[in-house]
Length: 399
Image (cartoon, rainbow, N blue to C red; front, side, top):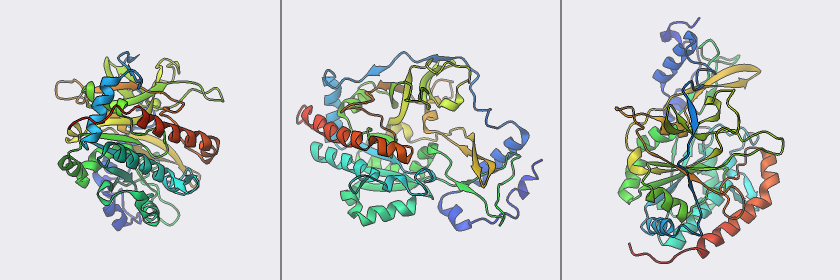
């Protein structure tokens, strides 16, 4: 049974400076620990019980025919209204303890360098710099900043390279107590990319971007090099007036026969939102929801300037051969927040994008083996994609 909450951290050898530096939320930990101990929060409590149906209102992106949308997107880029956010946080464990963003993809060009190059190229093409913002974590920040410094900050102008960090928390045991090792030290972790919303505001960057004239944030994973700046996609987001647009692609089976795992657009109780895969009922057919979220979003900056409280879900991990629990918030669940009337607080648009080819948008690299298998595919995708973006450009559009 969980000891009194006042004793939850008693005897735990905490790194107070680290926890202060990365905004440890003690009150949230205590609430989560109490709920786990009471049995009201656990790995199964995240499963949705409401009716789930597919989302039918999906816009299929076609750069060849969507001239109006492309003009809208080009204008926004020419006016400096777009910023890029790259998720560079997490625990830096999947590449053998090396920060993935700093890993070379081809030659000496890392994931971060290639992401930055896309922003630099777009800025050059449309005449206005595109702010390039990194969300780091306590596990990635130092190595990332060293990587940037050693590579002349990836060629980015000083005013265009920005960063902030997500929070830190402590892993728990299944009974709700704090997990510690033989020396009494806790196991720290970064609690999910849902940290993006409160941490961006707290950092002051949201206000900075607004003052600079930015109206849209393009948000993607550091390991998805397909999520480049595309005026047609940007224009589709803006033309339809959604607070959030998510890039989705058709769900399919992998070489091993398993279906894509991850988030998907769905109506939950009739309300459209993006639902993470582990929240779907286990008996739901894997192809019931036909589209798959690439975790690439376009956000209205104005819509993000408010408190956006996301739920935290239990995720099981293994540390030193023991099962531990960590609480994570997921960025896609901002689409599920309800306002005072019960309606969605933020409106959602769903954009179906190509998955493969020169305009493909989803090339995730989760493990070293993925990078080896896709290295040349990624090279071709970026080179052809950049050429296609320039070739399709409509021309100079007055501000």
